[in-house]
Structure formats: structure tokens, C-alpha cells
Amino acid sequence: MEMAEEFIEVLVPAAVTSNRRFTNAPRTINLSGKVIGIIDNRKPNYDIFLVRLLELLGQRFEFAKIVQVRKGETETGKALAAADINKLAAECNIVLNGICD
Image 1 (tube, rainbow, N blue to C red):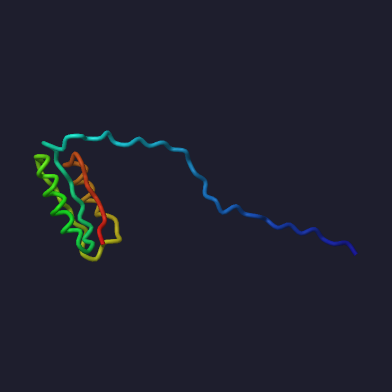
Image 2 (image 1 turned 60 degrees about the horizontal axis):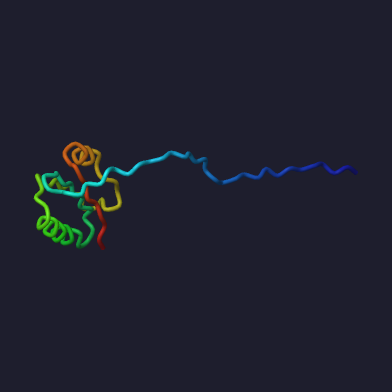
């Protein structure tokens, strides 16, 4: 009796990657005269942190304007709304984003 050959296909679960290079945005040393964007993610105590951060930065720099956007109250895990991203991109020289819990 002849045995039939059986083959097992082995799949590699690795994704195909690309070697794209990114460069960092140039650093801004002096924030005076700049429009600063702030993203408030509505995490507990982040608003307290932002007030203190802006107070400390305001002692060192004179901002032209501060643009603040806020995620919706229940959207802390969701991406920022496209309209808010566009607003920050159009109006701001620098955008600060962070997380506090």
C-alpha cells in the first residue's frame, strides 16, 4: 500500500513593512510670539496640569495666542476630531499634547 504525501502550508504571520524615513520638525527655541495649540484630552486632572503648564510657560514666553481644543467628555480614547486637527494645523506654530491620570 502506497502512502499519499501530505503537505502542510506554513504561514508567516509577520506583516510586510516599508522602510519609510521621517524627519522631526525643526525645534523652536523661543516660544515668544508663537501661537500655541493645546489638546485637552479630558483625562482626570489634565485641566489642572494645563493651567499650571501655561502659567509656567507664560512666565518665560509671551505667546501671540493660545488655541485650545478639547475632546468630547466621553471621547478620551478616541482620536481628535478632524475639524480640531485642521484648526490646530492652520493656526498654530506648536501644539502641546499630553496625558495625565
